[in-house]
Amino acid sequence: MSRSTKLAIDGGLPTVANGPPVWPVPDEEVLLALQSVYQLGDWGRYHGEFSTKLSHQLALMHGTEHVVLCSSGTLAVELALRGLKVGPGDEVILAGYDFSGNFRAIEAVGAFPVLVDINATDCCLSLHAIAEGMSTRCRAIIVSHLHGGLAAMKAIRALADDRGCFIVEDACQAQGATVEGKIAGSWGDVGVLSFGGSKLLTAGRGGALLIQRHDVYQRVKVYCERGNHAFPLSELQAAVLLPQLAKLQSRNRARKASVDWLRNQLAEFEFLRPLQNGARECEPAYFKLGWSYEDTALNGRTRTEFLAAIQAEGVAMGGGFQGFVKRPASRCRRMGDMPASRRAAETTVLLHHPVLLKPVNELQLVVDAIAKIGNAWST
Image 1 (cartoon, one colour):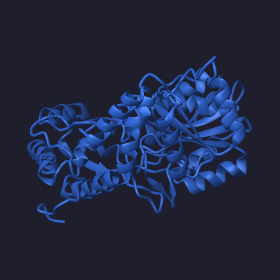
Image 2 (cartoon, rainbow, N blue to C red):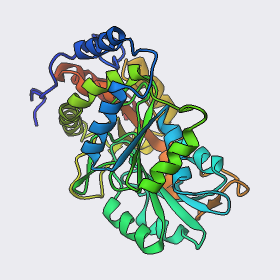
Image 3 (spheres, rainbow, N blue to C red):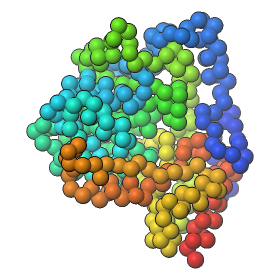
């Protein structure tokens, strides 16, 4: 693909020259939704017309029986474990490289994290490592789709069923993605979404559980009931999510087109190795676009130095998660040295998704900034 190739970017998105990426983008339909909630007098409520409609649309989208809206994706993981009756004495498989809130969610329910390695190519759980980490106490597996990578859910689902374990599928970074023929979040016994301020669907905060079984749904509802719903999503939040949900797939297609273009333009730069999906029949949703930073290609210049330099050029790029490879044995069981998880924590660099909805001339600025640093440091 040549540098003059045009991308199909969703119409109406603003361009901010020489400035940080804007998210959420100005959206007339979101404004109208806010005004509608105000005019109805529902702006101080939850469990109203908008949250009911959002729950229904999420259930249809994911083919799930039940949806529980809540205050954050982080809490949703904990609620999922509680709904599955995971607790003291149980073990939960978790990737050695993942969001820190997932580790805390396991601890919050009194279970014990078992850390296993990821695939070096896609930052997702290794099927072989999951199998090695399982014991008779294993009750659940938290499977996260990260940085544009998608876990091999068909094989993980088969393994979990064979061993009698539940799956909590963390699709907080993969809203609308397709994984081996099914939408992300629909493979798990419970799927989890996040509506945090930076997410592809944003309400500032918020989350949702996608639940297949009625008994799990009932346990989550009972836990949340403290005289009222203690962890709700408000009507205001539900209202602004609905128009975004309608545009999710078109924006995901635009982001993927941008990713394909950027990878083509950056293929010659050996210091950035793109993550690749091992799972088949996938259509990623890029909340973050991930690379592994190879310092040996730039005369030993560190990732910290690279990120400082690229941010100085105005590119919204940052590091990945710290991961859990240094967690003490008192808090978890680690399966080996987990080299891929360790490397991901040390080398991952991420481009934030609002850049991917920019026109091609602004994407070119990202390429130019990376080329400028690469050319200067490789000599």
